[in-house]
Image (tube, rainbow, N blue to C red; front, side, top):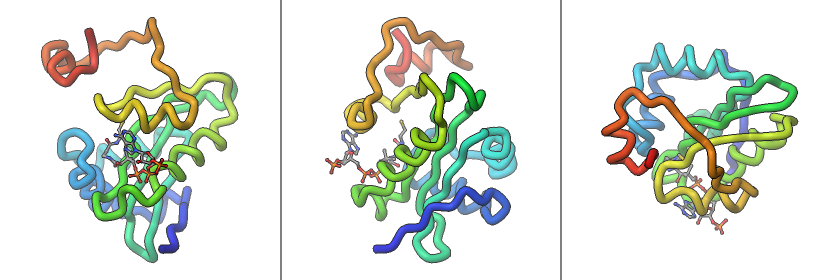
Length: 141
Ligand SMILES: CC(C)(COP(=O)(O)OP(=O)(O)OC[C@H]1O[C@@H](n2cnc3c(N)ncnc32)[C@H](O)[C@@H]1OP(=O)(O)O)[C@@H](O)C(=O)NCCC(=O)NCCS
């Protein structure tokens, strides 16, 4: 199956991308307008297409020099397990060209990221909208 990566943000249906996240699944249903804003504000973004069908995506915040943070990596369920997620991560890592790349995994997905060299941090901290919910989801202590 031929999958093409694109970094062209002007060619994206944000409704389609919202559907990719919803079906993957990754978090709550996203507002397509907010999704567009988040991707436009991210220095690095990549979209995976099967023909004209959007099947996966990922993005990273980056200062372009030292630090980057990967978010929102998702692949449509029927396309998972075919190396598309790995291709997206590798693209983000290689194009970031910074010293440190951070991310936080959905609980259970840590092993996926370890393959690329990510290691658990001992001092990473976060402010979240709801501490209780973040704790329930296994994201904070
Ligand atoms: C996580 C996700 C992006 C991976 O995409 P994918 O296209 O299925 O990944 P790949 O086919 O490239 O899989 C790469 C490898 O990781 C492995 N892998 C995938 N999910 C894994 C998991 N939860 N734990 C351990 N290994 C995992 C695969 O078995 C594969 O191993 P292999 O290379 O030895 O065969 C995809 O499953 C997804 O969209 N999930 C829902 C959204 C999500 O959880 N995103 C991540 C947020 S942290």
